[in-house]
Image (cartoon, rainbow, N blue to C red; front, side, top):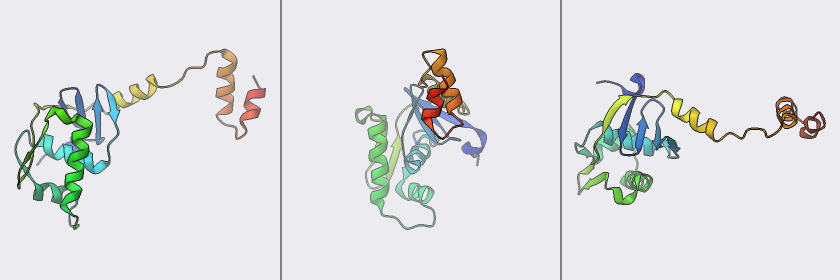
Length: 152
């Protein structure tokens, strides 16, 4: 069986992309904060491309050789539905059996963090004056912020 984590695969559906190697979910290029087990739940569902994934299969994948209550899985699915948009209907419950991913999934090579880096760069604050730039640059290696401010 192919290992998506090792081979750098990502899965796209609608406005979302899941990077299997980084274990990150993106919405329109921006990271969506999710706990690792929640992302792993999503990966388990999208990797099966619409096929039923039983509760037992999910429990074994998420918590191998560990006893946990089924409510943990239910909570993960709840958090996924919330992150994906509760009205989207992307995750179907098959009563007493498991879950199925209902969206159209496209498998692609992963972006290797480029999207995350570009998001972080867009959110960076650029200095507004040369003096401030020098203060920020000099201040990086100093413990005392007031010393960096006096050097401008």
